[in-house]
Image (cartoon, rainbow, N blue to C red; front, side, top):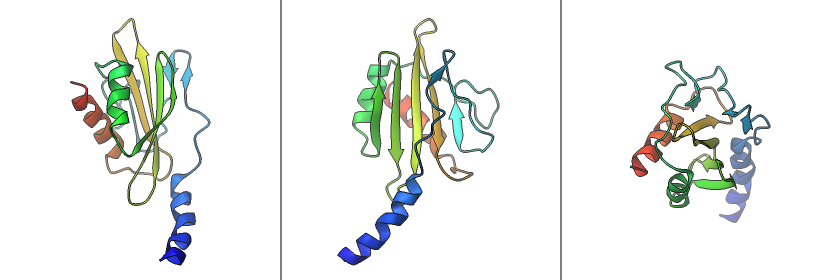
Length: 135
């Protein structure tokens, strides 16, 4: 069993991908989504990538994330939160960011897969689940 586990670990690590270097806040906004359909953002307006901002504070969102086994909060600041979500079976990692806009009273969001082309709606479903949990 130990030998089998050791042979699987490199595969699972490869599924994680490398942390992106182009995320964070730039000019008061989160990074735009790539053209691939594995990203959603409240700063995008097209049907494939666009999603509504959250009517929740970062504290409410952080509270939800702390209850999720697949979420790992990497960076939490006064108006920005960054978390990695790891899928249970394959170990794929998605990067999820939240930016609180005090003037609008909403939290903008960006959720993107590190690897692959399609996410089969995983990023959109994740944000909608977080939205429902903060109501």
